[in-house]
Image 1 (tube, rainbow, N blue to C red):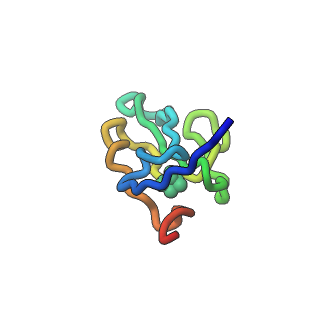
Image 2: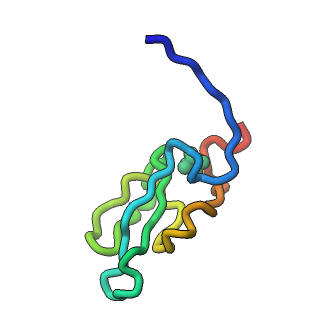
Length: 86
Ligand code: SF4
């Protein structure tokens, strides 16, 4: 199968194929039952960050933790993004 390489610019992480959103409610606060965390699956979880509720390791590096769903679209590209300035 033929593959092609497409180069494109993005302004926020939620436009990147390595961006991942995970359900991550605070188990002690029912008002935050729909809280989420956002991850970069391109980078390792090098500080061993974990989910609030299950204490399982995140499957990537945390971009934002315990945010509201409407904030996902505003996820800024962090300074440590492996594609920045390439
Ligand atoms: S940090 Fe970079 S590679 Fe990771 S999700 Fe954001 S834009 Fe994609």
